[in-house]
Length: 357
Ligand SMILES: Cc1cc2nc3c(=O)[nH]c(=O)nc-3n(C[C@H](O)[C@H](O)[C@H](O)COP(=O)(O)OP(=O)(O)OC[C@H]3O[C@@H](n4cnc5c(N)ncnc54)[C@H](O)[C@@H]3O)c2cc1C
Image (cartoon, rainbow, N blue to C red; front, side, top):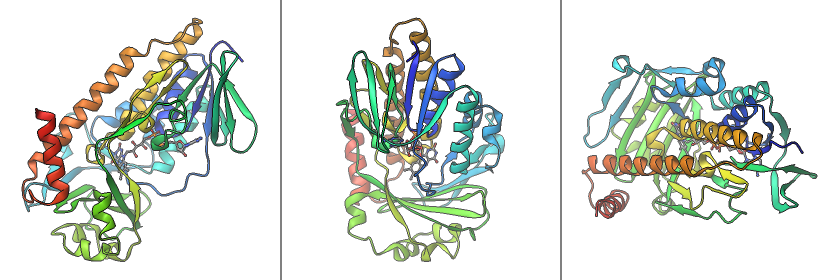
């Protein structure tokens, strides 16, 4: 085991960013990648400004193969679908991601920077003789001085280390993907409804994603109702096109949550393993890349000097980002006043009132 030995568990945006940055600073990095992840994705987009941020970490090639986003449309707080054109945005356009391609390019950038890619799934973790031993579900173990948990919402490593997790809501995303026959708008379209909100976005490769964001209990009451719920929308059925109502959606967790501890002796959590943001903010991927990369830099620099990183400033910035995003969630919930007694909106109004007090 070298003086700077870092194991990054999970090779999504956060893990690849941590590994690429740490390896680029000369650290001996192993990136553990579970290749069994399916090809189902939420239809993520990068808002203006964020493509430059991810390119700064992974190189410009990470931006190849995605669709340009020319704007967004939203029926939020009013029945009208209003368009925001990115043309006038000084930060430039956004991107509609092919996530499988994005993650593969991010892993390739980490390997090009010098990280060792190992396939497998981390199971048990223990600390012995000054080092971490991480068992792989497939057999064998990996050893490292420092571990970064970048396993997404499962927070598979930090949960075992007692990080705990606090959720602000019980939001779920009911997501369907299908061949795109939508109305041709190059960007994400959003519509608020009494039960929550919908979004649809075209994807590279002629596909489209449509999702309903609501609370888990509200979805439980209407699980068989996808075509009927879509039929109740004013805009979404038209934006998403005729194949949408026959699609078979899947429920995904989409709550805003965070680890009670972001780091401890010899470990930290980054990306969704540290905190998850409301998909409305479209900032999960860029936050994972930025904070993963900063974590990788801090760990590499400290370990190369034979010390442990001071992660307090990094964690403080992460908590600031969490608070700012919670404020933004409250702001958007307050803009939508059409259904004050509908449980989805009443819960968010109550939360906003508590935050203001
Ligand atoms: C409905 C929805 C819509 C969204 N829309 C957007 C959007 O428009 N824009 C945006 O920026 N963000 C969006 N997000 C958020 C975004 O998807 C996440 O924030 C982002 O993927 C987080 O990256 P990550 O690397 O932290 O985690 P992940 O992408 O989840 O990667 C974690 C990796 O760890 C692996 N792993 C898990 N457990 C183990 C283990 N035990 N051992 C080894 N590997 C393991 C997984 O297989 C995976 O490869 C959305 C999320 C949802 C739910």
